[in-house]
Amino acid sequence: MNKDDLIKTICDNVIQGRRTKDDEGIDDSLSGTPGVVELVGEALAAEVSVQSILKEGLSRGMDIVGKKFEANEYFIPDMLAAAEAVSAAMDVLEPHIMKAGLEPKGQFVIATVLGDHHDIGKNIVAVLLKGAGFQVIDLGTDVPADRIIEAANKNNAQQVGLSALLTTTMPEMKTTIEAFKKAGLREKVKVLIGGAPTSKEFAKEIGADAHCKDAFEAIAVAESHAGSR
Image (tube, rainbow, N blue to C red):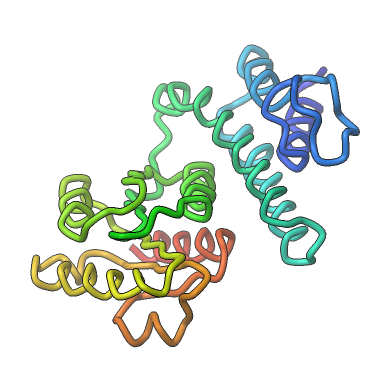
């Protein structure tokens, strides 16, 4: 397989949500063939640039997944499968990214707020941010404000993403933003919020910089902020 075919096949397998040859994929059309992990290995062995793998293979595949999601052709499980395929590829690529000297677009801390243990949406955003070129510090779920602030300060993060799926934990987003103000870091950090019960109105009310309705909007907002630094 030549380099162009490898990149295209990586893209196709992202769209199908296939991590390895053992995964069937969304419509079974690629069943039994190498998945994203094997293909990324092949591409590296063939001296395809890391940047091409990231941009033309992984990111382009997720762009198509995003369009399918917006068109209601794909649903959450489909998007999650694609994100997991990208995550597996990023595990393979990470040491090569460092060797290639590719500078991250910025440091991004992400967490589900205190009292909330839901992580699917957060995990998808984290994976896509990595694929888009950000250095992601994922703190997990049920994270108190002081730990988020500590991570943002320690890693010199330019952006922080807060997730909540429960209406009862939404106030923790405001608590975290207020804590950033008290720590004197609010002007240095853009705060993005997301999760089913959140809204643009709520983001404005609590002083967040943006509300993201889904993972793809989160990436677009993060990239717009990175470009304005």
